[in-house]
Length: 133
Figure (spheres, rainbow, N blue to C red):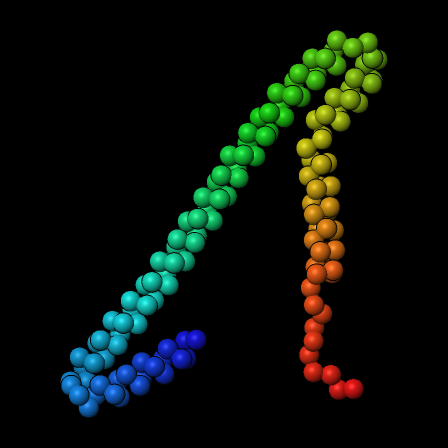
């Protein structure tokens, strides 16, 4: 793509050289190319801004879910305290409640990767290149 743009610029220079001053022509071509590069850069900056806003919004959502989880964990600890289980059982249940977010994250990632692999395996085309047989 860069080479095509370069070739077009060179052609513009040769076409306009016969009509007017070469320095003015080169300046016009460079200004046009600078404008195109600036537009590309602005587009990338907007894309980066939107992606960073998406990440920020996801962090807010994750924080809210974690806060809700903490409240539910405290409530479950309270009800666990009121139950007539042995101390060993209460400690085991409390550990399960505390470790739940970490364990479920590992399972979610594994399940996501498995389902994505199956999706790609089922719905994509294999390589259809030139065969020698």
